[in-house]
Amino acid sequence: MDVLLVEDEVELAQMLADGLRGEGMDVRVAHDGARALELTAVTDFDVVVLDRDLPGISGDAVCRTLVASAHPARILMLTAAGTISDRVEGLGLGADDYLAKPFAYVELVARLHALARRPGAPGSPTVLERRGVRLDTARRLAERDGRPLGLTRKELSVLEVLLAADGGIVTTRELLEQVWDPYLTPETTAVKVAVYQLRKKLGDPPLIETVPRFGYRL
Image 1 (cartoon, rainbow, N blue to C red):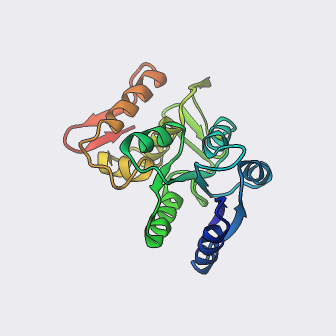
Image 2 (image 1 turned 60 degrees about the horizontal axis):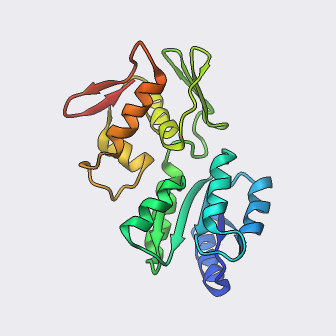
């Protein structure tokens, strides 16, 4: 796993980088947002561990830039602010996961491995196709019968999970774990909202079937 660690606290960054390298990860370190953007411009990292509170160019700005440029890296945001509103705001920027300081090192490692298992991770098929829907996972572009769909980051990930199932049922729990946060409860409305929006963008005839008490399939 190729990881970019963006953390302005030098000692903390060095400690985390050494630990992650000991886990077998290839880790680069940036201490500010400008350097992070320089590195991500030339390297397709698998995961970017991104502190929100950076000098100069903020972590939020770096996150927006990566999402807007369709950089393939998963983004794990770090912050000293751990309230629900902060978490929602961070995920709303397009981050894939969120971890509040102080955190347990073992949790960071677990979350990195979870992100690497999500759709789009190394080794996943580059192009997925089914029933006229085509998803280029490298460029993060989707179309139906040649019509661009203009999907958000989350909608792309939901579509990828459904396509990868090749007609099989994908449970709500599986979608939560692979696209959102494994610590969310199945009662959250995030999946329903994303599937609803995805259905609208896919258009008619409908492609996503709701399987009562189980989940969804395409």
